[in-house]
Length: 439
Ligand SMILES: Nc1nc2c(c(=O)[nH]1)N[C@H]1C(S)=C(S)[C@@H](COP(=O)(O)O)O[C@H]1N2
Ligand SMILES: [Mo]
Figure 1 (cartoon, rainbow, N blue to C red):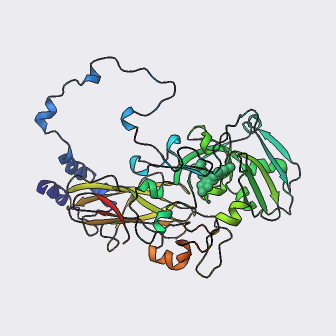
Figure 2 (figure 1 turned 90 degrees about the horizontal axis):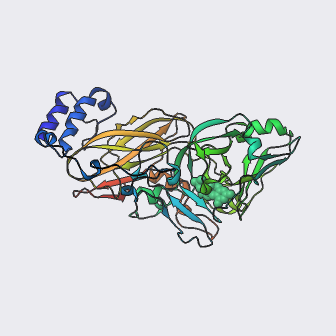
């Protein structure tokens, strides 16, 4: 340990914040020194490294190549957790295991899913998308027809308005990053911009909104201001290069980059241009957070700037003092992530994390910061800024603005716990266990 410290110190690398936290410059100035310091954590000394012997898997021909690949059998624990595994007639949620994956996009089998009335088993050759209402020419699009239009690809996070609801709890709940933040994921979508299709149908000047409707049993529908259609709304056909999975809207979904998950209508079958919103079930009842003075948001479109640490986090205990990398994801509906600060002392002092390229608008940005844990208690936090200048509020600021109503439902129809974008605080105990605290 003493030796590893001296290597870092010789390179002039000093922690940038209390409790052993280095900042982004450590990666530029000290990459080599950090790597050298890390070698102390490998299991073998140089004598053991000479004696590599063939393990059983090296002594024979390996397994068959699969027609469609699945992860190693040793990774079977890397899975979504399901809120309703027997598919009883109520909403089903599957949450992304953020603490068990890395990088910036979510594999399709691990992307979160919320389906209010199950996943319809849609035959793509029979599915149609209708665009009608305040248009000049109503049109019907088959999947084949859509495939002939120019397509675009873009990375986008998708987040349920109810993600991170556990952090509204008055007492910190002992949950993992997956349980708390598992209703956000990020993927590369490919499809046809809605604006391209509206050029075909034409737009009646009276149109101010469009209503998007799904083909599932609940015919989930949401109203969207028309300007989003003319900006970056997409009819998505592919996710991470392959056809969208049944749970995520096969064969087509509405994608509204950065906007509340519920508005991203899956199994899309209809878009109606209108002069006023539909006041449908979800927009009139579920997604209208109530404020302390009794008023309510009628719409809360944007998923605002947010970040959380995925490594370390609950379930990933630290194995002894020394160097670790703190990493997590940051994202904002208002563009690119501009800066992420990390703290190891519960927000008393901060160091700037390195942002991994590419930093894309409305997509996950992976941040990383080296940390030398001294074995004592520490509280890890991250705080993100977006390029529009927004910063994550503190938990106290959020509670004072959004009030008790965000925690305790005032009416049976008020969804009590939406749009939490405050900090997440992970406490590292002397035993290396990580727990959820409020700091
Ligand atoms: N047709 C339809 N669209 C839907 C839903 C649904 O149940 N039916 N769930 C919504 C909710 S609440 C969210 S958060 C997102 C989740 O998208 P995902 O399941 O692809 O992650 O889809 C939305 N679109
Ligand atoms: Mo949602």
